[in-house]
Image 1 (tube, rainbow, N blue to C red):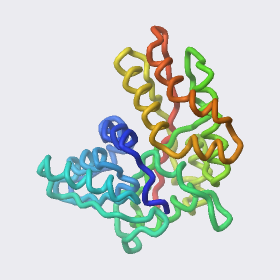
Image 2: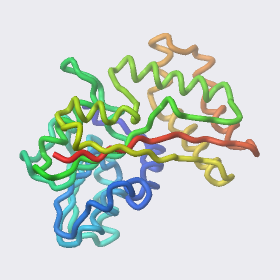
Image 3: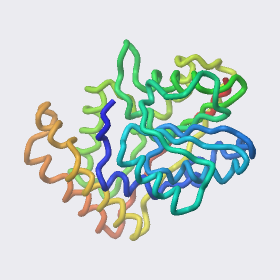
Amino acid sequence: MDMKIYNPAMIASYSRRTAAVKSEYMLHLLKPGMRILDVGCGPGTITLGLAAHVPEGNVAGVDANSDAIESARELCKQRGVTNTSFTVGDVFKLPFEDNYFDIVHAHQVLGHLPGGEGEPGVVRGLREMRRVCKPGGFVCAREVEWSTIAVYPPVQGILEYHALVVRLASHAGKIMAGGRGREFARRAGFSVENISASAAAVTYTNPDDRKWWGENMASRLEASSDLRKGVEFGFISEKVAEGMPAAWREWAEADDGFYCMIDGQIVCEK
């Protein structure tokens, strides 16, 4: 796994996520003494939110990126949370024994995993999450369904960016299709009758949200390698790549700006 997958803009974005909003679909499963694993925890904001629901239990966060783990540990210290720990680790080789956790959780992680061994990364990731989950426990995941994104005004550079993400993902064997959660969970070893699915909308419509999202996306592109890869692979031209950050800032200034995507959510009992 690539240990340098985040840039500062990405960490800033992930730091806005909370369990109350992003993990609401599975909070009813939590009980005070549970052991929980948050896979791909990033800077730990969701992890610490989950920990508040299990005061007599403990929560472990694992992420491939060491900078994100350091941010999570610092936030944990600042908040005085004592039932949480953070570890650098590979989602395909989680550093935990079989049948250990009551809940194994992931938010916007599985769709970013590369394929290998003849299987999509999302299936491989779910199978490993299932391994460390106790019998009778739950594996929970929320992932974007990329095909549902709606943007207005339809700024050309943003539309080209969306198409580029699909091509880069396909090239790496990644599948950003949260709507296929049931299928992926079944292929990872869960019984069909033990898989439930739901959906949630993510929107950026008011001026403050638009400004934040547009600037964050522009900053991500300026700091990431996606545009360079797109040019190297022949998916986009240099000119198109250069214009994409500005396209996000243009959209953010539009009075009628609207951005929405649907996340698929699955809860799988082992």
